Structures are given as structure tokens and as C-alpha cells.
Length: 393
Image (cartoon, rainbow, N blue to C red; front, top):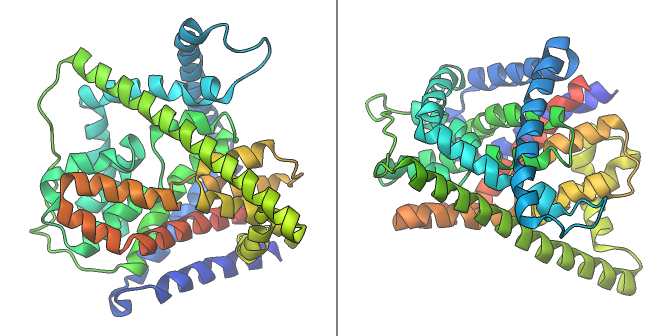
């Protein structure tokens, strides 16, 4: 029965995307079917095979080692602040972002990341039926982040149609940056995070192909990556270290604000209606949790976590999932974990609009106009990825 619900869930997601489509006659079904099959096969490989287990363990071991290196620097600066045996979230989860950001900067400076992004993007363009620009952007968003990726395409932003601009922004919102993957792995199981990263890459193309179909003139599909003034190695390193610290501080500030607001809302609703705000949200989102393959007995609690992620951010929801008293089954934990690994939330609309507007005001205004549609599509990507995982768990 659970497989029937999951398969039905895939059709529901595709139908919801179809309802929002800007041109239903132009939808290409062949690449959509191909990419869904690829998603299922990749999920089976990563979650249900020995080879997949080796891949997951290898990636998890790399990030575990990076976090150990990061802790050396953190201990030197903040040693003694934490009480013996305690693990403050800011020190152990957020500050390692600084070190991983520095590594990304080094790989970018040595031209390793651009080479990988171009190569993987080129291969993806052969499968997804889209252009080289869209394919590169999806991979680059995963590598460098949803706001930084637009800097690499600065020259081309002004020449893009609204259709292509939507796809670029949808890819950026549907995935997450490698710089914070290590932070996620301190809260959720690595196997679900890695699986989500891969599935969201294809899911973004699937949903964008339905919501936003268009034809690309091959003569216009020229990939020109913007390279800023060549910095010295240490100039670049300092910049990326500071950028990583800014991300850590911003995420920390958002967590303080959002968690405090959620606690306030819950308290007020319990006083007035004898039910928490999150529980109300849980009931609203429980049908979506159900079509994702989550049993109805767990759907309300799962729905509250999903709503928390949409209204606040993924960090707040991950903390709720990992630290809450929910007693979810292993299968439900896997489905929810995959759903949470994306930037699909209301605050991301402002981040992406601001990033594009800082480079091209006209295009930034265009992104602002389809901001809600962008969030709608990115949320469908997260739901689709969770449903695919429910088929193999």
C-alpha cells in the first residue's frame, strides 16, 4: 500500500506543477520521465546497495574529518567558553562553516570547482533537455551557494529571458550550498543528506520543465562564466573565511529570531486555543506528509516540521526533528530528512532577489514578481525528492 501512495504522490506533485505551468503545450515529457527514473535508480544505489553505502561512508568521513580540523581552530579561539561535556550549537555546528568556506575558496582559486561545474553541467544538459547555462547553474548552486552563483553569471544576467531566469533561480532555491552540508550532518544522517543533494539536482529540472517550459536557441546557449579581478591566494582566502563567518553569524541570528518567535506563537496559541501553533500547521500539512509516504499516525507531527521549514528555514526544522520528542519510525525520519535538505523557504525569496538585484536591478525586479511561484516550485522539488526516497526505504 505504501508504494501505491508514493506513486500516487508523484502524480500529485506533477499535477500541481502542471496547474502552475506557464505553457502546458510546450512541456517535454520524455526528459521528465527519464529524470524520474534516474532519481529512483540513484536512490536505490545510495540507500539500498553496498556500493552506495561505501560512497555515503566516504563522503561522511570526509566531512567528519573536515569538522575535526575546524574544531582545532574553534578550540584555539573559543576554548574554555563551553562547559565540560557540552556542545554549543554555534561552536560545533555553525563555526565549522568558516573552514569549509575557506576550502571552497581554495578549490575555486585553483580552477578545480569551475572545471567540475562545467563538466557535470555539460553531462546534465544531455539528460534534462535544457541548456548548458541552466545545467551549469544547478551544479554551481550546489557548490558555491544560492546567492554566490549569480556572480559567476553576471555578464549574462541582463540578456536572460524571464523563463530562463526563473529556472536559474529555481535551481538555486531547490538545492543547498556545500559549505553548510557539514553543519547538516551534525543533525541528520549523512546518507539522507547526500541522497537529497542528488535528487534535488534532477528534481529542480523536472519541476521547472513543467512549470516553466521553453525552447532555447542553440546560438543563445553560450556559457560565459564571469571571473572577477584575479586575486592573490591570501586575498582570496581572507575573503572566503570572512564570507563563511558572515554565513555562520547570519544563520545563528535567524535561528535566535525564528525559534523565539515559534516559541512565542506556540505559547500564545496554547493559552488561547489549548493547541500549539505548530500543531495547527501540522494538521494543515499532514495531507502533503501523507502523499510523501508518511503513515497517517505520524503525518500531523511530520507536517508541523515541514511547515516550520517553509516558514522559517531548514536549520530550525532540522533542530526540531533531531531534538524533538517525536518517536518517528526510521522510514519517516528518512523521508523528512530528505525533504528538509533545500533552501525552499520564504526567507530564500529575499536572498535570491537581493543577490540578483545587486548585479542587475531590472532582473532583480523580475525575480521579485515571480518570487512566490519560485517558492512553490522549489517546495514541490522537496516533496518529489521525499516521495522518491519513500519508494526505496
